[in-house]
Length: 415
Image (tube, rainbow, N blue to C red):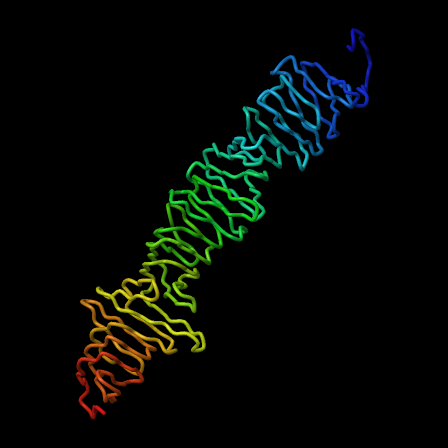
């Protein structure tokens, strides 16, 4: 019926071109989108160039998507625009159909909910089915499902979850057991100081992700964080299990790493950096565990390392303190040890230091300062005095020597 006139056996109605008049369809029954803008089918009639649809029943007033790609825009909780047609009074569940690129968008900062069902999304109390793409600048995404979900973040800031791609979103809230894959994010993830929360710093925006139990990333940053290495390229921090890591940077003053992985700690040619279990740690202040071996770096003799013994057997290199190490394998590139107090020679460029109940084995050392007492090997040793309280033995230059106890029974000699 149009303007009081009743038409029968109609197949197509063309509302005409845009002339400033809103062409409206009022119906109580389902409408089917065709995939063409401003076109739909209702009661077997194809309507073209339509501007709006008013449903007289929110139960039977169903919007059904097409087999092509349909575009939906949430204007408010009571109004949706689909393929450039404005709908009101509709059923709050909208099936976008079987199109491969059905999309829905909403207002800036709008809240969206997923529930472990592929291609299903809810916002403004409207539930959409069959959706492939969701767009909302500053959008907030919340998982209200009961099973662990996986979110994948690309470096362009897009998020994949439940077979949908989310664009423009700045927040993800999980239920506490979600899994995050941020391996494609070049700048990696940043810990926030709150458990189960990170920030993904993509090339376009920063996405705060909360309520996750596990995350995959190449790079992780934090401040004053306690990290626990569990395996190669894997660690736990702030109640999140991380995998795939190659770099961890802590900008605080008390970052700590404890490891159960059976691997040594290898210094690099950069200050305050050490590699362990396939991960480069930078800015960490205290490190312990692993196989308790600290290894120097080989930079063709261009740089050297200095190991400073501290009370309790701790070893400091740069601003890093290694706890519980029983072996230090330096590279012999002018590497030095400070403040031994007392040591026992074991071979060329090698000696042991006893600190309480612990023994630290050093190899590859070229010089020692703060030496104290030197005990020779069980074999023949040669000690060459080079100056006041200084001497050379086993290819090691010693300073601040207080006494020498020749340990051998052969032809030990001082020169």
